[in-house]
Image (tube, rainbow, N blue to C red):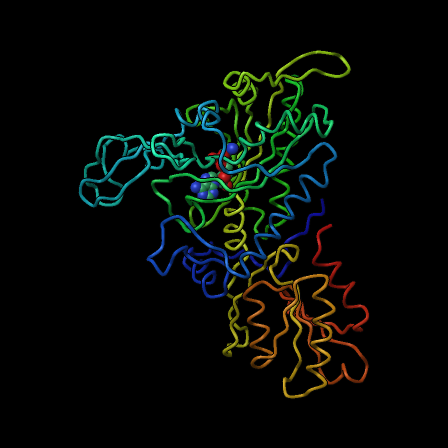
Length: 455
Ligand code: GAP
């Protein structure tokens, strides 16, 4: 995979406050609170016109790297609702529980595992010092019902983690795609959790999207594949970040391992929220296939076609959040740059990787009242639009238009000026350095394509 280095001009900037991202997201159409006209729903968000482009690019880049570029990995798209027994087998009905305490004075609610140790020991609220209630347990699974006749309706759940579909489809995929172990199955899909303390914008939501790889191996090869995927995922995140030094691994202590994990590392990213989990690399061993074999009565063990050895495959899981990626990339990319001349020309710029930027190029006629400039610019825009997301803009002066594109992370602006009418060249301005070059219109498509499509 190609790694792009942080351009020299992106200096180490301070951690970006969350309210800057929330405000930009709403103002420029990245993210809106869901059901806002009814007062909103905590922990649920919608994605606007630019948000959906960014999100699609992030998903596509993941899919390209994980599925298309690995001969031993295939993809599926499973359903959100499954048979309710799935969640008994997976351990979620029994174990997917948060322990919560409330402050008797200020009435704030906290997850015990998020409280500083001294507050737990002293039973003291971290906000106001008030006394905390006894811990209560809440299951995070979201219930739903299938059927319409009262008394005959079947209670089931919206999936609490997307990956369960992969175990359910494992046998079908292996047989229908003639995959031999070691091989992996990927999926991107929604998950739902009744988070009791949804907060921090997209960081902890009730409806969110996960990407998972479940990689099935012979037990003797577990360590080597665990190491491979752990490193591969770390490099993947590094490849799309400006602040690569804000990425690290953290190994889970034995007291914090999920019920299915024998070993786990988080890939963490440092933001204004501190060091937080971005993706989990889990050593799931034979937990999932053994449990589903036991609960369904369908034997999911595997027979090696060469040695005829029969065994239960072990699983390496890499599980990350699309929304957390979206949020972390905005936090990583956002910068407010004061005008070096001290004139009223400060700019906000999103240093998004060109592969992921929602709009790849903006085509701008220097003046909107010159018909030939407008016609030429619209023609260029139309030809680029077939290859990539292009915006045509002729509102306000050229400086303002550049600023608008900088703020949404558009890597290139193409300006059509009077020289264009003489020699069929245009100006191409690069977002981060603000440098400009002149290019024949005939070379524009290839020039941009080379820079904004992943390779
Ligand atoms: N299948 C394993 C699993 O679900 P997880 O650590 O609970 O593991 C994986 O979730 C990833 O999903 C996290 O690293 C995070 O990026 C994302 N995620 C989990 N809960 C989330 C939430 N409430 N809101 C947004 N993203 C979440």
